[in-house]
Amino acid sequence: MQYFVALAEAGSFGSAAAQVFVTQPALSQQIKELERDLGAVLVERLPRGVRLTQAGKEALGRMRTILADVQDLASVVTKQDDLSGELRLGVIPTVAPYLLPPVLSALRASETPLQLRIREAQTGKLLQDLENGHLDAVIAVAPGGPSSLSVIPLFSDGFLLAGAASDLADVSQGPEALRPTKLDPDRLLLLDEGHCLADQALDVCDLTRGQTRVDLGASSLSTLCGLVARGFGLTFLPEIAVNTETQAQPDLALRRFAAPQPERTLALLRRGTAPVEGRFEALADLFRQAGHDLLEQAKKAPLHP
Image 1 (spheres, one colour):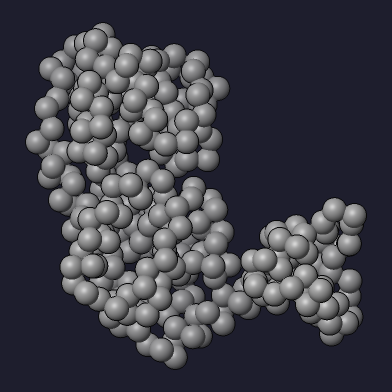
Image 2 (tube, helix red, strand yellow; image 1 turned 180 degrees about the vertical axis):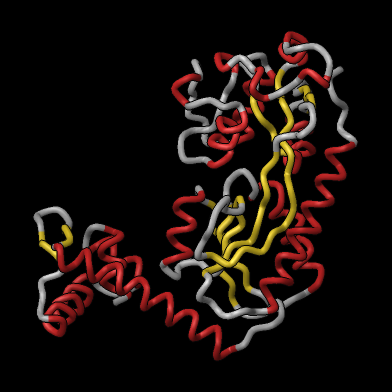
């Protein structure tokens, strides 16, 4: 089943074989045996790659669920209640550069035996990998509605308006008047599509992506900060990123929005079917403390009048 899932995701026998560390003929033989055992053809073998049959598509979902359950079973047996063993963690790009350094430093200082394997990707991909059992947990924005995930809230991360001082001076005067919905969409720069921070910025401004005139498709918050610091527009900056980005861009100016300040709630997400383990709470405490430290630093950052 692991070989078949790898083949379905890679799209070719060669790439899948490399992912699961077997030879291509061995992988092909295993897929043939799986098809024979199931009594159905799962893949169409094309000149370049493969295509799943209808039976293959249905089998893929079931196999992913089974493999995730097997991973959860292993966790039940080991009963890991402290920061030990191996843990595969996904982190979204607007969090990873700011929270990971202090968290990893704290883990190293405590000399815990935890082997943390990090993957940075957009929310959609991380949640898919979490569901498929490729990840054990994800640090991302807490889901807004009912969810099959187990959610451990971490902290609220407010948004500030960032740009060149001259551009911020042109925005409505007085902090009590600064509201996201009053911003000129033509001046707003966002991350490329798929980043949850861009979706949150559009939501608090009551906009759709098509309403913004400039869409640079930037893939990192640091890129956006470099652009707006030089007068190319305005953007939203999470408080946890303030210290890092203002040090990197001394010309970056900031303003706070009027209350209630727009914000996002970060959380540690796990599969709802996975067993309760103390190490997840311990890891959440590390991220929570790192976040609180960064938020305290953000409060000391000078703001544009």
